[in-house]
Image 1 (cartoon, rainbow, N blue to C red):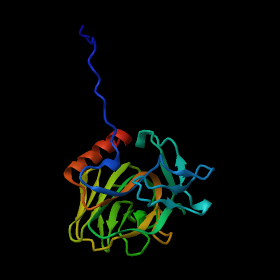
Image 2: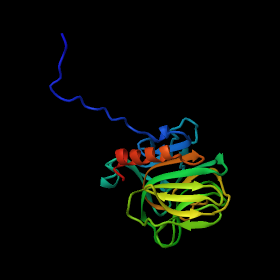
Image 3: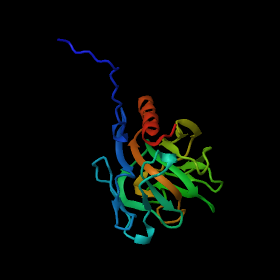
Image 4: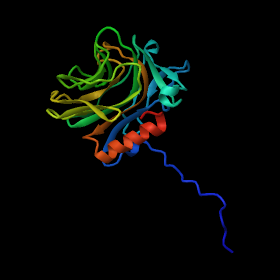
Length: 235
């Protein structure tokens, strides 16, 4: 006897994950639902989800970002880390070590930006590539020279910064905001929320960050857009 189904079968939607970006190697991935709570609601460590062991930490309690379980409408109520724009950061010394070409991905909303450049993602040296909001409170990136995009503050954005000498590209929510020559700086270690020395402190909400070896393929970029829409409601 054959069974009949009076209602259409429901399609099962696959949950995307940055760890599964197609055609590329994800070197490190940090997501705000995977942090170590110090017991006071702040992040003492931010483990690397890839299994490569590039975990981030902050030993000073006063410099720890706040863990926010519900990031609100800007992030589809997903968890975020809230950086206070005063002294919050997490970091890892010396590794990973990357030379160009590579890509930094940040899913964030900048909020506290007055008074000069504010760096959200970089390495552990003055000579490391970084994503930042400049003194005009506009998204930019640097690898020896700077290029400025168009995204301002108080907006959730997927930042994709590709570093490749004379052919660097900055994207915000999939759209090219800046392109051209920056320089040859790479990454030695990771710093999130400040420059390597604790200055240029960034303020805002950070949902996720990643480092990718090389450039995202067109398929990976499409996947990233679907992931951002599905998980964070960012289109």
